[in-house]
View 1 (cartoon, rainbow, N blue to C red):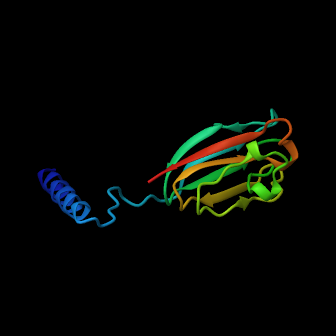
View 2 (cartoon, helix red, strand yellow):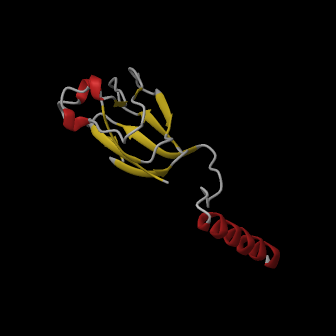
Length: 134
């Protein structure tokens, strides 16, 4: 355990030195698998409605509903502009129709706030939000 503590101290010191030189530093280990899971239900909601993940993390949506849903963050497909939002430089995404039991996974590579919606249920207010931090 003492060795692990010393190793962490050394890595923190190296990262601090690199940051002082203006070099990009990632101070957390790589993540494996989905960082967060979101469910779609018959009540026309994404649960949880808002999640926070890190750059490089994946989010997986599961359609636990008896209805077809989408996970859409594309302003070109929104009926109203308030249903969607993308950070500067982020690429729009759309799951297409997810049948009951279907899943969709997206990896977030740009930090910022993503507002997304379900195309068939946008008017009913089926929206969600992913906050991506560096």
